[in-house]
Amino acid sequence: MTEKCGVVGIAFDERDAARPLYYGLYALQHRGQESAGIVTHDGFQQHSHVEMGLVGDAFDEGDLESLNGSAGIGHVRYPTAGSLDSSCAQPFSVSFKSGSLGLSHNGNLVNADEIRDELAGLGHAFTSDGDTEVIAHDLARNLLNEDLIRAVKRTMQRLHGSYSLTIMHDETVMGVRDPQGNRPLCIGKLEDGYIIASESAAIDTLDGELVRDVRPGELVVLEADGSGFDSYQLIDADQTAHCFFEHVYFARPDSQIDGTLVYESRRKLGRALWEESGVETDVVMPVPDSGRAFASGYADAADETTADGEPRAEDDEGVEFAEGLMKNRYVGRTFIMPTQNERERAVRLKLNPITSTVEGKTVTLIDDSIVRGTTSTQLVSLLKDCGAEEVHMRIGAPPIVAPCYMGIDMATREELIAADKSIPEIGEAIDADSLEYLSPDAVADVLETDRSDLCMGCVTGEYPYDIDGEPTDRDVTRPSIGGAALEADD
Image (cartoon, rainbow, N blue to C red; front, side):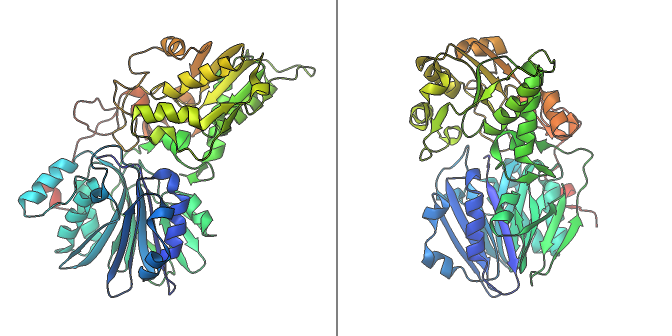
């Protein structure tokens, strides 16, 4: 089951962690809207509260007061498959001979079913079909025979796929990032403690200071008194597989991921989009809010050069940048609404054109992606119905041609409009006067990362993991699940 979620972990010296965790989850709400949960430990026992719904609905004042302890972890969940009920809500908690364990997971394991089957054969009883419970059971089993560091390493050696974890073993809070760093995870310093979170925006919300990203394959253990953290590089990989789509779509623009401010990345992607496929029109406008940073960079580049790449003359006013679509902020993100009918209805509820911006003008509409084509088709229709003479569409990412197996809802190939259509065919299908996407090479250049160190499976059809029925872009095999995998090196 894929999980595109947000995780957080905090350790303080004395004060309770529950309320800061609650605020941190609010900052990560965009990463999951299905459920929210917090687990704390007061030095004697573990406390847990996990509910379906948004953060603000999942907790009340009494819930927070009951979550005693200066250490804790939290989770917001966005499911794309598997159970949609409370059985997969997180953090997942378990008590066993060696203490209590809480675990929050962002990502997706390729070999979860294999590990679950083996553990079930050894007598482990599972209550959900989620990856997180598989990780928790495996780690709990290893903790019966090993110290904390070796137990985590043994579990990591058995996992194949994408995972950023916050873990609490009794009152010890940890963060783990998979060896290829597919999902983001960072460390922050608070006034009287430390925090681990999916995005730096959660650290900013608590007036903290970003220390650095958790490195791929690294285990970070927060000191119980909130004074610092210890680092253990448990697994080294030859290549990373950072998800480029975090920069394009999912992360908050005010977050820093792997040393890059997401907002600036999107502006640079917009500039590159103009340089690759700019078209002269009367006005450039974003699809709010997803296309705003791209459109800003695109328009800035258009003010400096023509679509042919020549410097603009002094008397050439360039391209107007304007808001042409008004957003109803009380409608959720169409991208994570589970049914097609809901997505189609939400587009009309969510966006309304500003007539004065588009009537009688040629328009370039900028967005971050086209997945199924439903939203783009309706937006082009809205603008033309409002009097736009032409509507050209520019996309700040390459065409999405394949599903994501690492935790972002890209749907199936049958639903992806680019899976079986060329770019001109997609443009015709959405009734745009022209359509262009950004190239994969331009994305890698903007992110200052070699393409071989990015996960671009959804736009290339080749994945950095060994996935049944799919080609891989590198030499990688799954770890064995049997006894050999348990022979971890010291």
